[in-house]
Image (cartoon, rainbow, N blue to C red; front, side, top):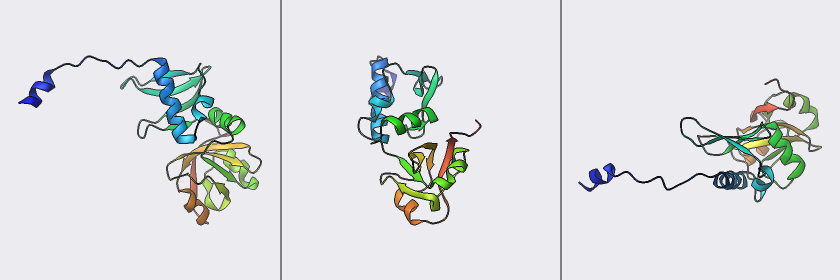
Length: 174
């Protein structure tokens, strides 16, 4: 009886989503995903949000009309754009989620080709399968962004197979 009664009560909408709350939320997610204090450096005060029409939740984060990141609804983590990855590489060297490749495969990866385990020189220890990763060459030049297919220990151990499914290369045609 009680559950029927409670289901008929309309609760007031007490949570108001302000820009400050949204900014704090995305910065916290970035700190979790890419390392401490990354969120504040990656998402300045003047970012804008595009909300999902269906759920009303944050879907895209833009800066000056250009997409920085997409908040994935499946796991509430970010998929980065090339612009955001470039900002991380150039301004936040302590960020997590980097994979360093041999220079001789740079052109192929920059065009959007997947990363094979044999070409990986170094992978951050915290990388797990399905994590968002930033692919750079030995000179710390950005090549691509993608999703890890393997964890860091597996990437180091395997000599065959795809280590990262590249989503965007810096020279890929989108």
